[in-house]
Image (cartoon, rainbow, N blue to C red; front, side, top):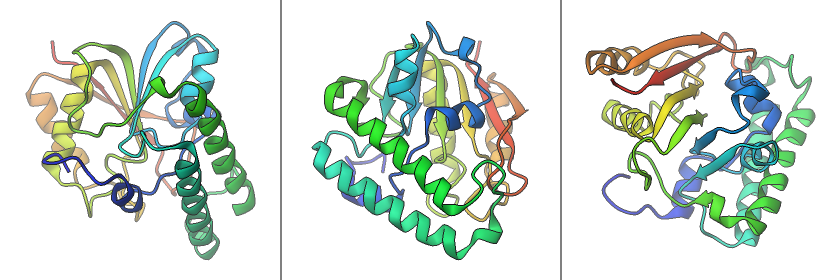
Length: 234
């Protein structure tokens, strides 16, 4: 993936193009509104999340990155609809594997997914400059461009597809461009803690990065309630 420009349709199939709402981001990353206003924020890989659109309205300067961007709104809408349908079908078959306190049921979860991508598409159609078609571990930004970088449901989720070197390179890159990096979740698709979390943290600490595990007010995979916070090396 780092060696050549990926086919964006292939990427969206390998890593399903779904996003979260602004409210869900606040849960995932334990964000207060005071964490956002006046801050320069990177969302990577953002997918069709509505965070950029909503956070911008409350005074944050947000840039979203995803390799699937750069396509017409109509194409992205088709990709979003297909991704949500597939996700909900899987959730319906495996409801007992998830915690439903926040959502109640699959139908409500689906409303969140659709609300996120509908808000994203509306903003993307009017402010495409906020949405940069790029991919980890190589980001097209100057060092220290952002105050905060957020990465949801990508790193540590796909142990079967992304190796240790990819995780290390990606976190170093996020820490290069942002003063603070927050990653959630720290579990792979099977809800087990990613095998890469501890070796990544050990290596980053040996290189001088600050790392901290913080509990967040969100649980969908049972027991998965921690985010990793990484600060740039001094």
